Length: 200
Image (cartoon, rainbow, N blue to C red):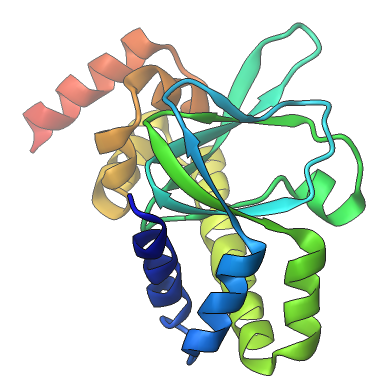
Protein backbone atom coordinates (compact mmCIF):
# COMPACT_ATOMS: atom_id res chain seq x y z
CA UNK A 1 0.00 0.00 0.00
CA UNK A 2 1.20 3.51 -0.79
CA UNK A 3 1.59 6.00 2.06
CA UNK A 4 -1.16 8.32 0.81
CA UNK A 5 -3.53 5.38 0.44
CA UNK A 6 -2.86 4.30 4.04
CA UNK A 7 -3.66 7.74 5.46
CA UNK A 8 -6.72 8.16 3.25
CA UNK A 9 -8.00 4.88 4.66
CA UNK A 10 -7.37 6.18 8.19
CA UNK A 11 -9.22 9.39 7.29
CA UNK A 12 -12.23 7.40 6.03
CA UNK A 13 -12.16 5.35 9.23
CA UNK A 14 -12.20 8.48 11.41
CA UNK A 15 -14.96 10.08 9.36
CA UNK A 16 -17.28 7.23 10.29
CA UNK A 17 -17.83 9.18 13.51
CA UNK A 18 -16.60 12.75 13.06
CA UNK A 19 -15.81 15.32 10.41
CA UNK A 20 -12.06 15.18 9.89
CA UNK A 21 -10.39 17.90 7.81
CA UNK A 22 -7.54 17.49 5.35
CA UNK A 23 -5.38 19.51 7.75
CA UNK A 24 -6.07 16.92 10.45
CA UNK A 25 -4.94 14.14 8.13
CA UNK A 26 -1.72 16.06 7.42
CA UNK A 27 -1.17 16.22 11.19
CA UNK A 28 -1.58 12.44 11.40
CA UNK A 29 0.90 11.97 8.55
CA UNK A 30 3.44 14.20 10.30
CA UNK A 31 3.16 12.29 13.57
CA UNK A 32 2.49 8.76 12.35
CA UNK A 33 4.88 6.07 11.19
CA UNK A 34 3.92 3.45 8.62
CA UNK A 35 5.01 -0.08 9.51
CA UNK A 36 5.12 -3.12 7.22
CA UNK A 37 5.03 -6.28 9.32
CA UNK A 38 5.45 -9.67 7.69
CA UNK A 39 3.36 -12.72 8.58
CA UNK A 40 4.38 -14.41 11.88
CA UNK A 41 6.50 -11.41 12.97
CA UNK A 42 5.88 -9.84 16.37
CA UNK A 43 4.65 -6.26 16.58
CA UNK A 44 4.76 -6.16 20.40
CA UNK A 45 6.81 -8.39 22.67
CA UNK A 46 5.67 -9.35 26.19
CA UNK A 47 7.64 -7.62 28.93
CA UNK A 48 8.14 -4.43 26.92
CA UNK A 49 6.51 -1.06 27.55
CA UNK A 50 4.53 -0.14 24.45
CA UNK A 51 2.82 3.26 24.56
CA UNK A 52 1.58 3.33 20.99
CA UNK A 53 -1.72 3.01 19.22
CA UNK A 54 -1.67 1.17 15.89
CA UNK A 55 -4.18 1.63 13.09
CA UNK A 56 -4.38 -1.57 11.04
CA UNK A 57 -4.76 -0.50 7.42
CA UNK A 58 -4.21 -3.94 5.90
CA UNK A 59 -3.77 -7.40 7.35
CA UNK A 60 -4.51 -9.33 10.54
CA UNK A 61 -3.00 -9.63 14.02
CA UNK A 62 -3.50 -11.89 17.00
CA UNK A 63 -3.04 -10.68 20.58
CA UNK A 64 -2.01 -13.35 23.07
CA UNK A 65 -1.18 -13.41 26.75
CA UNK A 66 2.20 -14.87 27.63
CA UNK A 67 2.22 -17.38 30.49
CA UNK A 68 5.04 -18.12 32.91
CA UNK A 69 5.71 -21.39 31.11
CA UNK A 70 6.40 -19.56 27.86
CA UNK A 71 3.11 -20.58 26.26
CA UNK A 72 0.63 -18.10 24.81
CA UNK A 73 -3.16 -17.99 24.92
CA UNK A 74 -5.09 -16.10 22.27
CA UNK A 75 -7.13 -13.19 23.62
CA UNK A 76 -8.05 -10.81 20.77
CA UNK A 77 -8.33 -10.70 16.99
CA UNK A 78 -7.54 -7.61 14.91
CA UNK A 79 -8.41 -7.17 11.23
CA UNK A 80 -8.51 -4.34 8.75
CA UNK A 81 -12.10 -3.00 8.87
CA UNK A 82 -12.79 -4.88 12.14
CA UNK A 83 -11.30 -4.07 15.55
CA UNK A 84 -8.60 -2.21 13.63
CA UNK A 85 -7.00 -0.14 16.42
CA UNK A 86 -4.42 -2.16 18.35
CA UNK A 87 -3.42 -1.13 21.87
CA UNK A 88 -1.81 -3.09 24.70
CA UNK A 89 -3.90 -1.49 27.40
CA UNK A 90 -1.69 -2.43 30.35
CA UNK A 91 1.30 -0.58 28.87
CA UNK A 92 -0.60 2.16 27.08
CA UNK A 93 -2.62 3.35 30.08
CA UNK A 94 -0.35 2.50 33.04
CA UNK A 95 3.16 2.52 31.57
CA UNK A 96 3.91 -0.98 32.89
CA UNK A 97 5.51 -3.84 30.91
CA UNK A 98 2.82 -5.57 28.88
CA UNK A 99 1.80 -9.17 29.48
CA UNK A 100 0.70 -9.44 25.85
CA UNK A 101 2.33 -10.22 22.55
CA UNK A 102 0.91 -9.08 19.22
CA UNK A 103 1.77 -11.16 16.16
CA UNK A 104 0.98 -10.72 12.48
CA UNK A 105 -1.17 -13.48 10.99
CA UNK A 106 -0.89 -11.94 7.50
CA UNK A 107 1.52 -9.53 5.86
CA UNK A 108 0.23 -6.27 7.30
CA UNK A 109 0.46 -2.48 7.10
CA UNK A 110 -0.10 -0.25 10.13
CA UNK A 111 0.18 3.36 11.22
CA UNK A 112 1.94 3.75 14.59
CA UNK A 113 0.91 6.76 16.69
CA UNK A 114 2.46 7.77 20.01
CA UNK A 115 0.26 8.06 23.12
CA UNK A 116 1.45 11.61 23.86
CA UNK A 117 0.32 12.69 20.40
CA UNK A 118 -3.07 10.98 20.80
CA UNK A 119 -3.56 12.51 24.26
CA UNK A 120 -2.79 15.95 22.80
CA UNK A 121 -5.44 15.46 20.12
CA UNK A 122 -8.01 14.43 22.70
CA UNK A 123 -7.27 17.55 24.77
CA UNK A 124 -7.37 20.02 21.88
CA UNK A 125 -9.80 18.59 19.32
CA UNK A 126 -13.38 18.11 20.49
CA UNK A 127 -14.43 16.09 17.43
CA UNK A 128 -11.55 13.68 17.88
CA UNK A 129 -12.20 13.41 21.64
CA UNK A 130 -15.82 12.52 20.90
CA UNK A 131 -14.68 9.99 18.32
CA UNK A 132 -12.14 8.43 20.71
CA UNK A 133 -14.80 8.02 23.41
CA UNK A 134 -17.23 6.39 20.98
CA UNK A 135 -14.50 4.12 19.67
CA UNK A 136 -13.59 3.04 23.21
CA UNK A 137 -17.24 2.28 23.96
CA UNK A 138 -17.66 0.23 20.80
CA UNK A 139 -14.46 -1.74 21.31
CA UNK A 140 -15.21 -2.43 24.99
CA UNK A 141 -18.77 -3.54 24.20
CA UNK A 142 -17.61 -5.85 21.43
CA UNK A 143 -14.79 -7.35 23.51
CA UNK A 144 -17.09 -7.88 26.50
CA UNK A 145 -19.72 -9.51 24.31
CA UNK A 146 -17.28 -12.00 22.79
CA UNK A 147 -15.59 -12.73 26.12
CA UNK A 148 -18.86 -13.28 27.98
CA UNK A 149 -20.31 -15.41 25.19
CA UNK A 150 -17.22 -17.58 25.27
CA UNK A 151 -17.79 -18.14 29.01
CA UNK A 152 -21.57 -18.61 28.90
CA UNK A 153 -22.12 -20.61 25.71
CA UNK A 154 -21.19 -24.15 24.81
CA UNK A 155 -18.30 -24.50 22.36
CA UNK A 156 -20.75 -25.39 19.58
CA UNK A 157 -22.97 -22.38 20.26
CA UNK A 158 -20.01 -20.02 20.56
CA UNK A 159 -18.59 -21.24 17.25
CA UNK A 160 -21.99 -20.65 15.66
CA UNK A 161 -22.00 -17.12 17.09
CA UNK A 162 -18.61 -16.46 15.47
CA UNK A 163 -19.86 -17.64 12.09
CA UNK A 164 -23.11 -15.69 12.38
CA UNK A 165 -21.82 -12.39 13.75
CA UNK A 166 -18.06 -12.33 13.11
CA UNK A 167 -17.53 -14.52 10.02
CA UNK A 168 -14.32 -12.71 9.06
CA UNK A 169 -12.57 -14.14 12.15
CA UNK A 170 -12.84 -17.85 11.16
CA UNK A 171 -12.32 -16.86 7.51
CA UNK A 172 -8.94 -15.20 8.06
CA UNK A 173 -7.47 -16.75 11.19
CA UNK A 174 -6.03 -20.30 11.23
CA UNK A 175 -8.14 -22.91 13.01
CA UNK A 176 -5.56 -23.50 15.75
CA UNK A 177 -5.83 -19.83 16.79
CA UNK A 178 -9.64 -20.08 16.94
CA UNK A 179 -9.38 -23.29 18.97
CA UNK A 180 -6.86 -21.71 21.35
CA UNK A 181 -9.14 -18.71 21.84
CA UNK A 182 -12.05 -21.04 22.63
CA UNK A 183 -9.97 -23.15 25.01
CA UNK A 184 -10.42 -26.37 23.02
CA UNK A 185 -8.20 -28.54 20.84
CA UNK A 186 -7.96 -28.09 17.08
CA UNK A 187 -9.31 -31.65 16.68
CA UNK A 188 -12.42 -30.80 18.69
CA UNK A 189 -12.89 -27.60 16.71
CA UNK A 190 -12.77 -29.62 13.49
CA UNK A 191 -15.50 -31.93 14.83
CA UNK A 192 -17.65 -28.94 15.79
CA UNK A 193 -17.27 -27.50 12.29
CA UNK A 194 -18.36 -30.77 10.69
CA UNK A 195 -21.33 -30.97 13.02
CA UNK A 196 -22.32 -27.38 12.15
CA UNK A 197 -22.21 -28.21 8.43
CA UNK A 198 -24.48 -31.23 8.96
CA UNK A 199 -26.95 -29.19 11.00
CA UNK A 200 -27.09 -26.45 8.35
